[in-house]
Image (cartoon, rainbow over all chains, first blue to last red; front, side, top):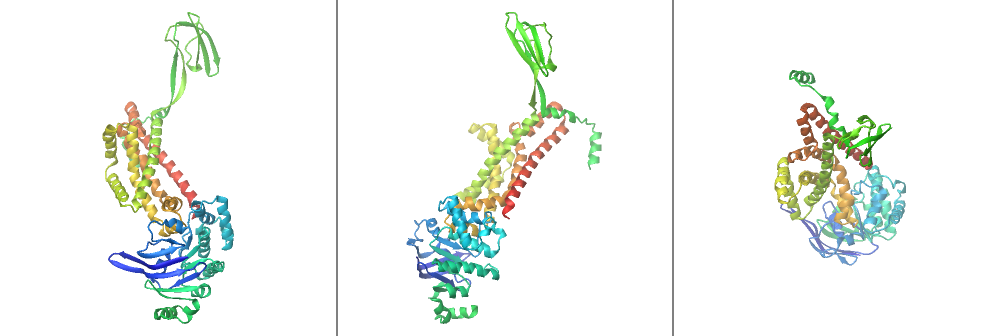
Length: 244
Length: 299
């Protein structure tokens, strides 16, 4: 589904060079849930943002559903509508109601009729458990509710892959559960997901595969049982000792 | 201070004639009705305020005049010569101050619309990644902000007006719109840049292209935030429009000057003109405050 080959993303500025993603090669299968973990600044968010072209790559290839993002001729907008993304800061559109947030891209990008888009939006709001809030503005919702709306907004495009960029990091602890529950349900339904998170419990329970990144490099890769019980690499061991 | 001003005004022996002001807003004009031939008044029918006077010429032609009863000047059987007055019809006419106010209003409105469009386009160029567009917009903004509006109006009228043969109205409106556009551009740029980056990223991640994201996501939010400074800019534009009176556009200011030359009621007229500008600007303020309240529902 998503294949990355020797992906590099190098930021240069003010005389500094930061190798945020430094030669990552991996493969996400259709229907697979991949969780990326690693210390802050390890490049996991940057890697995720490369997958839908929010960051331009310095070198290497990303092939999403057979389309190479590094090809200059690729229309990124066509790729992005197949790749949903959920952000740490939700990034809901504050001037639109919950329902309008979910139908906007359906109408503008997918060219759906308004009633069709509304129907899909209401289905998804039921699914994420906030059907009663459809006419509320995002500013009046709690963090957990906003994040669930953001998930519904991404799902409304009927994407083939969902990317989650630390979806629970900006939430109060009591709201983390409700968002993770929605994500678990999605995973059970067979959605292809790439999740950057610090929620080790979620990684253990839901992930098919765990990627551990440090300093822009993919250090270790394996099933959750393997990774959480007997990691090979010293850096992974040190990291796990701190977070568990 | 008010008392001091009042005593000082007393000292200079100025006669206030506020009663002469209203006629420069609205006055009753008499249109005299005259007979086109020699003849005799055959009949007068009074129908309340209106009166119909029938005149028969020596050849037997009959002509009816409808006039206002109060202005009737003839009796039945009066002999009339060509050009004699039968009476007059009265019409309410807008005075110079009303016409000037109207000119200022539509001139400012048209200049605001064009100013907004120019500002929006320039503001978008200013934040674009295209170096040429960016540099051009910076150049335009710097040139306009760095020169006085009065000089710009003169250049538009005397130079561009002569070279391209454009009328004073077009020259005046263009100068105002291009002046306002430079300031609006900076306001729009600040508004766009104040929207968190995540908004554009969220829009792009849903598959919207940059223009779609601008139209649906960024600009509506930026517009809401920039409404207060934009209001200030358009209020300035109404006031700055008084400068076009120097190229002989009969706006409110020029009308005031014209009325003064025929009345010498200098103080009253300038106070009146100031009040009229205040009226326009406060109505605009109220309208914008209303829009702001409407947009505040999503807060």
